[in-house]
Image 1 (cartoon, rainbow, N blue to C red):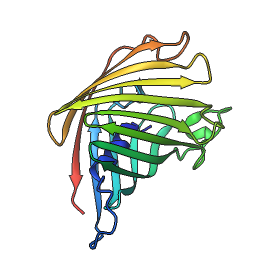
Image 2: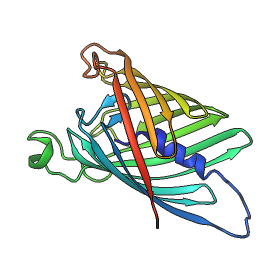
Image 3: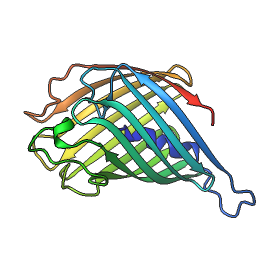
Image 4: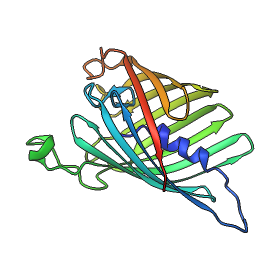
Length: 227
């Protein structure tokens, strides 16, 4: 599952939020990337395997945006496709963003998931996120649109960035008492293409699969695609 911080960051890029502009502009961008592993909300989703990903994004000057992101990296569910749409803007030093993101796995039970596990159809697993920011600090809250597949939960993040360095504290509050945990991510953006992340589960409910997980290290490299 795509880290939603990437989606929220996209809103900051297009946060014009202007009304009554004479020349309406839009931008379409694409990229491809590789990483040594797939980290999502502090959890190694790719079982340590290298992953390839790609994205296609549309950004409008009004602050509206949409896109698709795909990765080979989910070891449990197979290839993953994320479809998202949202709106972001800024008022002075304050930023805001709201978005809808759908997780789609185009596999049947026999292909990847296994007998007895419900197939995830389009829109079965989706989330809505509200993000707020002030200067370098940010907060977001994410909740599913349905509990049929994922159950009920709220995922909170507190972030802070300064220059090329960033920190994120994420807290998963799940209705399943054995599935809550807290993780801390530290990141460094070396340049426009190369970035590094260190992620660690700092607290987890007894019995949760992330408890005792080793500290994760991610190196990722992305390249824009000329359109």
